[in-house]
Every structure is written in structure tokens, then in C-alpha cells.
Length: 310
Length: 125
Image (cartoon, rainbow over all chains, first blue to last red; front, top):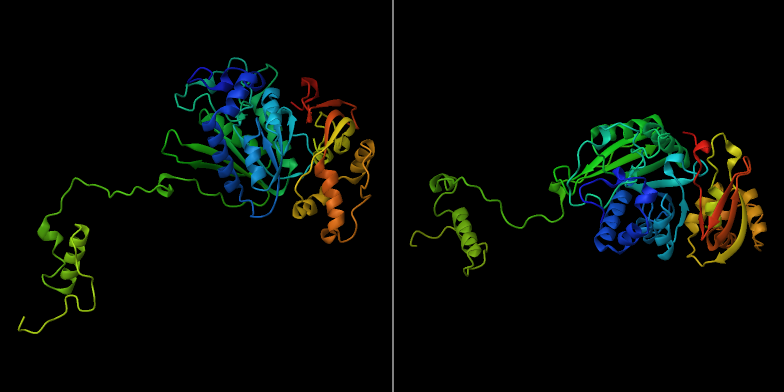
């Protein structure tokens, strides 16, 4: 892999970074494939695509077509656009069902207005060129495990690779052409890794200027590794933003009970239960069941009042 | 590149307005690829299709059985939908060129991938 800890978009333009070697690594890496499938699935969820309705989807930065295959499996038809010929060659080898186009998303999307029902994009930061001497965008090096492995395409737009490129203009050009290319009421979901809040703000400002409504959905905001930003854009009447995933709603709920250091005095804990009452008997039987002892089943006769002779 | 994609493509060269689509297709290598038939999708795509360009492209590729225009009640006419499905989704162009009707700019098409990259002077930025 390329040098760890440095963002790929800082190393050069995407068409050079994603050369044959990177493209081959990308498509052979099973973890990469896994992550791409998960992100595409989540993007489709956020798009709120109605079930059983095949849509015409634009996959920006489609690369090797990993996400496109997921779209095809879900029954959608897609077109992908990518700037790296090596990545598209890999996509051809994999015989994707969607068409792919070689193009620069910062120059605009070369389609008729109202073509697509939806659009997804993973890795967005790559597209924005960083102007000459500005140091604001590469302030800190992110030392995450994923680091150089997945970069979002929009990130590349944030870095200027040629002097003539201005990030804000390229971003605006991209978003406005995207807005026209979507049908009325179409949605776009862009997954990105913003370097800092200024970059995120720049991206969202340009998207709003282009006419989109929507916002940023953050999954797992408290986790450094799992945190993902999805920019959800709606080109029509504004709809409510879907909720981001968080640890509370994670599927694997811990099976153990939570342990506390504090202890409640026994007498106070038992204050509510009257000794020898039916409730007390039932509780004792439950306690013994938990301890694994053999206990008679509870019936209508459990703890009933007996004659004084007992 | 399928004919459906070609029909919806547009040239995004600076200064090119509504007549920038669709590009004229010259094909040197074509392939027929069977694709599963999905009537719902075809029905939704038919209103978006630019018929003149589709007929021209189909003529260039010497395709037979191309409907001239959408017939009334096409949503339920399975034969019509199947023909459209074949024309739009199953015909793939592998080698050729695309020409923007307004500016004359030629985009090459190789291995089924059109190269839509623009030079600096042609972009909006």
C-alpha cells in the first residue's frame, strides 16, 4: 500500500495515484471488497430507493465497479464514471453490468438533464484540487488504520493538482451538473472523509449553491474507526434526513449484564418484598432457577394461602 | 457502451447548450449481449429516450426491428417493450467515436468506454 498515514489525495492526482498496481490491489483485497459492499448498501439505504423499483443510478468514482455490482444485484441499472483508466480496465475485466465512462467529475457530468433517478459516490474528497501554496487542507495527518486505503472521490476535488484548478469552482461545477442530471426529486448520497471541518463546509456550501437540500449523516460518530460521513442531497422538495447509525442501534448487542461498582445493602434491596408472601416465593423460585437448581414449575397453587394447621 | 447510455449522453463542453446531446455515434465494432428483461425499467426509460438520435444510431449500426416511435399504450405492449429492451440494453458498442453535434468535438470510444475527458480550455472552470 502507499505510505501509511498520508491521505492519498495529497500525493497527486487520482488518475496517477490509481495506476495499474493500485487498481489490482484494490480489486484483490477482500476487506476492500467487503467495505465497498457495506458502504454501497448503506448508501442505498440512505437513498430510500423504493423496493422492487429498478432505478437508473449514476455511480461517480465507480473505479473497479465493486459498488456497481452490488447495484446490479439489487436490480438497478447503473452507469459509472471514473477518471482512472487503470481502474476502469479492472472493471472491464470483471465484466460489470453497467456501462463505465472515462471522465473527470470536476468538469461536469456529461449527461442530459433529468437522466438519473439517483446517484451514489464513495470517496469524494479526491476531486478537489488544492491551490498552490494553501496549507489549510492538509493540516494534520490522519493515523487511522484505513488511512490511504479508501479515499473518497470528492476529496480529490478538494486538492488542486493543476494551478488553474480552483477547488470551489470545480466543486460547484460538479454539483450543479449533478443537480441538472438528476430527475426532479432525485437523491444523491456521497460518502466522504473530510479532512477537517473547513473542507466539509466548503463542500456543503457548494452543494447548497447548486440548489441541493439535505445534509450530512454521520454513522457511528463516537468511533474513530467506524465513523462515516454521508452527504445526502435531495434535488426536490426537502425531505427529512435519515438517521445516522450509532452504537446504541448496533446489531450485536452485548449479551452480558453491565457491572457496577456500587452495592445496594441487602435489607434495602429487599424492602419492597414482604417475607413469605406469594411474590417472595416466586422471586425465590426464580433465584434458584437462575442458580441452576431444580425448581417445581409455577402454578396457580404456588404460594397460596394454606389453612392455619400448616 | 449500450445504446441507452449513448442516448442520454451529452457533451459538456463550455458553451454547448441544449443541442449538445446526444452525440453522433460512429461504431466500428458492435456486440450483442443478452440482458434480463425488466419491463418496469423499460417503461420508465422510454419517455427519456431521444428518438431521433436512437433511430440515427440504430441506422448507423444497421440494426433491424427498431420501433420508429413510442406507440400508444406502450406500457402493456410486451412485444414493443421487448424490442426496445433489445435495442437499448442488449446492443453494445465496443469501438467507435462520438461526435458532439454542436461543437464537432470528437470523443473516442475504446473497449466500450467513452473517453469524455475535456481539455482545460473546454471546461466551464
